Image (cartoon, rainbow, N blue to C red; front, top):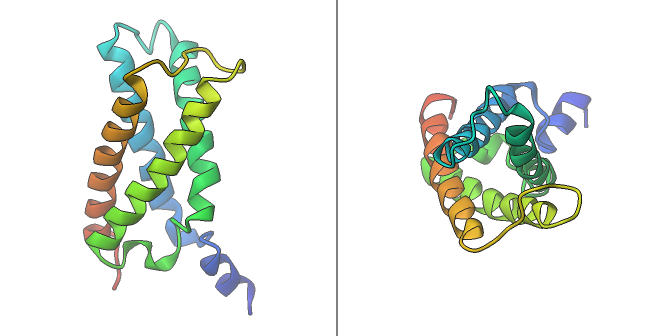
Length: 139
């Protein structure tokens, strides 16, 4: 197996870079929107916002390769893209919630934050991935 084939099978294909960037922008966007809704200004309090985003991005970095979210087939159909996005976010959000509940991050995971973060994340990422499947898919 050549190195390009190996990278594509592990989800590290160069073609996945726009998808990866879109995932991170989507995650950061809905988390920043949440901060704004709680009166936190990302310009005057950037570290607070970064500390909110980081656990969930770490969760995404852990879950995405395990669930092969950047494989060539990830955008094969809008339905496949939606299922993969929802499943990956469910795993990533729970990792992020565990991290936020640890002594290493501020914020905690008090009720109903877990439901909100999982629900809004699924809606946001499924929407983005369905659009990506329609626009970026070559198949």
